[in-house]
Amino acid sequence: MKIPYGRMIILAATVAVAAGCATQTRTESEFGDSVRAVSTSQIYDLGAAQYPAEEAVTGGNPDRLANVVKSHRENVGEAQQVKQSIQVSGGGSSGSSSNR
Image (cartoon, rainbow, N blue to C red; front, top):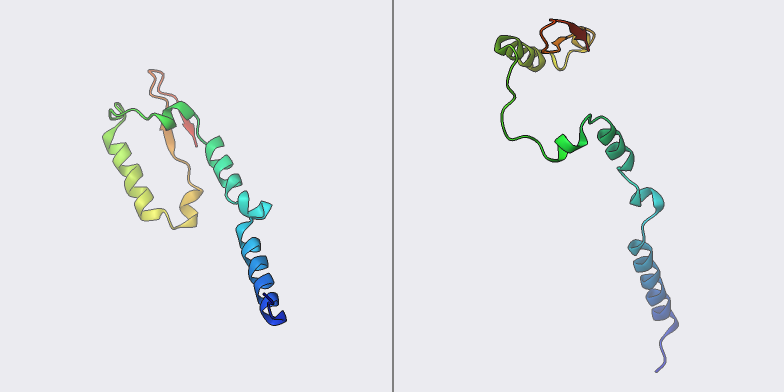
């Protein structure tokens, strides 16, 4: 069976394109790895992130927590609000607080 020269070129080009699409470059195979690594490094307790507690968080001042959520919802898009510090209490009896 004799294959015409033009069809042989088309067949070879089709095989080359299919082989090229089947492989990934190193950049494509590692896409998103840096974002996943940074996200993982920001989690303080990986065990708690993998197996979160089902019960609600107890303690805390409900009015203060409601104000924080309200402030976040209202000001999340305003860059100036990011510069303001939020007071976070340690929950201990000493009453100390830290800026974050």
